[in-house]
Amino acid sequence: MREITMPISDEVIRSLKVGEPVLLTGVMVTGRDAAHKWMIDTFIRKTRPPQGDDAKVYEELKKLLNGGVIYHCGPVVSGLDTKDYKFVAAGPTTSIREEPYQAEVMKHFNLKGVIGKGGMGAKTLKGCQETPGVYFHAIGGAASYIAQSVKKVLGVYKLEFGTPEAMWVIEVKDFPVVVTMDAHGDSQHAVIDENSKEVLDRLLKEPY
Image 1 (cartoon, rainbow, N blue to C red):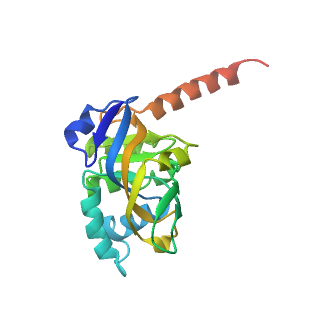
Image 2: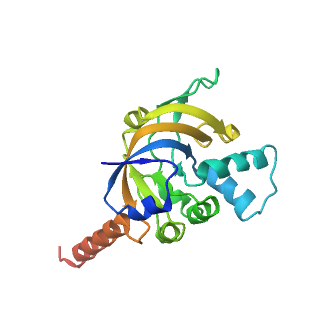
Image 3: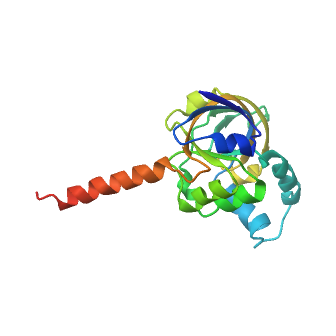
């Protein structure tokens, strides 16, 4: 398995190919629906003005996400009362929900990787080619196992979104993923979709 340290260079991103297993080490940020919508509305499309600590958080995210990775994850976190945060479970969330936003977020923040499950669509694939970046597929149903690779919770932004939707800054070691969308326009998910469609079409044509 290939070991990659974050932040990730364009050169490394372009060397990755669909199907390649990777172990990620370094700092990443979690972000789901609320976080992506907030980033898009406040700082990319600017359809709402920054409020509260928005501007401060944005400056921090620019540093963290430049060459970095965002993880579609709604973690189970202990220590919320004491702020001694620890990830109990850290499984991936279905990524297609972020399809309307992801390419713009990648380009704006120079994001090199997106982690989730289930893959993403044509807009994100184009974003992977342009930024460049890759989509890493994490193991669904292995939330506790993945949480073991989270060595430390360094901080949290936008906790007012709720624990699963907040942006957690985590330090990971040997976080296991597989490249399923690369910077060359290849997508394992597109292949699976096409193959599934062919099988379905064939089944529909067969007489009962």
